[in-house]
Amino acid sequence: MANRFVLNTISYHGSGAIQEIPGEITRRGFKKAFVCSDPDLVKFGVTSKVTDLLDAAGIPWSLYSKIKPNPTIKNVQDGVAAFKESGADMIVTIGGGSSMDTAKAIGIIVENPEFADVVSLEGVADTKKHATFTIAVPTTAGTAAEVTINYVITDEDRKVKMVMVDKNSLAKISVNDPELMLTMPKSLTAATGMDALTHAIESMVTPGAYAVTEVLAAGAIELIREYLPKAVENGTDLDARDKMVNAIFLGGMAFNNAGLGYVHSMAHQLGAVYHLPHGVCCAMLLPIVEAENAKFAPERFRKVAKALGLAVTADVSDQACADYTVEEIKRLSKVVGIPTSLNELGIKEEEFDYDYLSKNAMIDACAPGNPFTPTLEETIAMYKKLFQ
Ligand SMILES: NC(=O)c1ccc[n+]([C@@H]2O[C@H](COP(=O)([O-])OP(=O)(O)OC[C@H]3O[C@@H](n4cnc5c(N)ncnc54)[C@H](O)[C@@H]3O)[C@@H](O)[C@H]2O)c1
Ligand SMILES: [Fe+2]
Image (tube, rainbow, N blue to C red; front, side, top):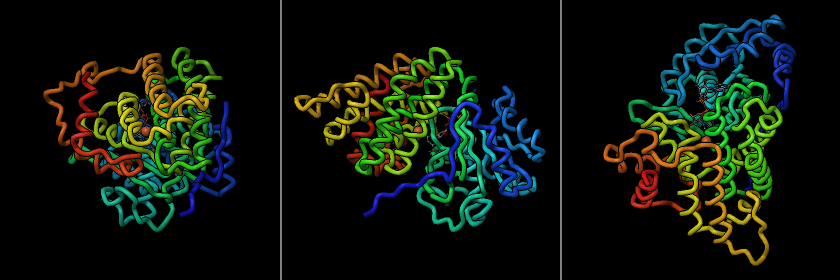
């Protein structure tokens, strides 16, 4: 089978990249932008960094910001109604994964109204038309939703996060401007950065990896290891923010084409039930799941360990590479201040529904990308480690 590689048609990078947005809209003859962002970003003046440019260029726009972290079916459906009412003919989404994923779902349903229930999009949906033309502008350095064909929407009734995989959802243009990230607080920088590390590592460990995605992911890991602690330490370090933007793009291209694994399958359940930040869930689960993966595919950790700084010579065993990887993940998590157990987040083990979360993790769309298929008992055992 051929290896697949999907990309935005254009991606802009670096300080001031958002200046390119008005020209991209007017040159294509679009008349009005539907701006999809979240309420905090509007309140703290991040969204307006882009809408001010639209105003200056005389491009009309209307705002949709009813978007929660871990966005819901209702956020999407209200957004579809707002899009239709707005008279807009394209989308500019400004935000983290939550805003960008909501915009992807809106754009897909506007063009493929037979999926208006949102739930029928779960997994690999057979949409016929590409989503509404979208420019994705990330304000966090983590999810890489601006460069991926995935989006994640929460079904509040079932308490699950639905992962949608659809080439038609990919933003046509991504604009990766580190200046939009200078306002991220330490905890958000840490969580989103560890999400990005998880993407890069899972995309290297998965059997879906191939030479192109491995090089991209290794580049992402090297940058994250060096620059995430700097970005957390000093949020206004523009160079560190810029390097994180590069890392996210590299890792995004890697996992978009190689796939993810069981860290994400298990993290999605924690996000859906406890509304925890996605990156925190990933960071806590990453060393636990990779320690298990190493029992099945230790050879996959050689390149990961090298990217994480180990001198991987011929006399270093696969297992030593895996052990180093697990310890290095834990070290990085500690340096950037990720909690080490769910107890610290106020979650009580006696109320934790191991069975429910584990069964949903097993059928999550990312699970097939893992090097081995964990049983119910193995999944429960991994969740238990989050309370130790
Ligand atoms: N599409 C994908 O491929 C993909 C991959 C991984 C995760 N996800 C999903 O993305 C979502 C998480 O996205 P996220 O981690 O980017 O966070 P988010 O979009 O949920 O935002 C979290 C909070 O950070 C705030 N924020 C964002 N940027 C900021 C900035 N520059 N300054 C100050 N505050 C800022 C937001 O207002 C919000 O309150 C989850 O639902 C997750 O499942 C999607
Ligand atoms: Fe993620």
